Amino acid sequence: MRLRSSFIATSLVYLVTTFHHLYGAAVYNTPWRRDVGLNGGIILSVCFFLLYLYNVYKKRVFLILYIAISLIVFDLGIGLFEGLYNHILKNIFFFGGMTIAKWRCFFPAPAYEIPDNFIFESTGVLQFFMALISTYYLLKLTSNKKP
Image (tube, rainbow, N blue to C red; front, top):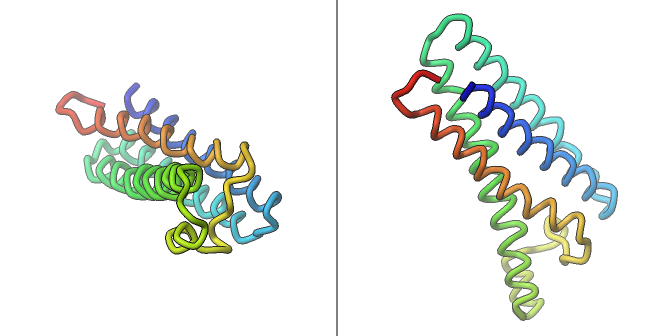
């Protein structure tokens, strides 16, 4: 049950970030954002395959690889960097009154957009909170109990 919950949480991080980046690619005419969905899908497939191998062979190495990949890519990469830095901090600094010149030092164009689209920004922020949930389930997998 814990394996399933963890994979569902990881998959939800992937789905939120894929929607976020596809939406951003369309709204801001930045086609390079579309690559996040494809690359993330490949990595999510690897995670699924590792859990499958763990279920079949019961070798802990497959579980450890799943945890490491999911933690690094989905929880740290997407959650901390994409959600927390790219959106939460970006919005706090922007709406908190930081001058545009200073703000652009931390968030240069074209990678960073002025926060002017509620859907784009809210799904960006949501990535962080989804990654927290995913991290919670990964931590449950590392306990001494059988996953």
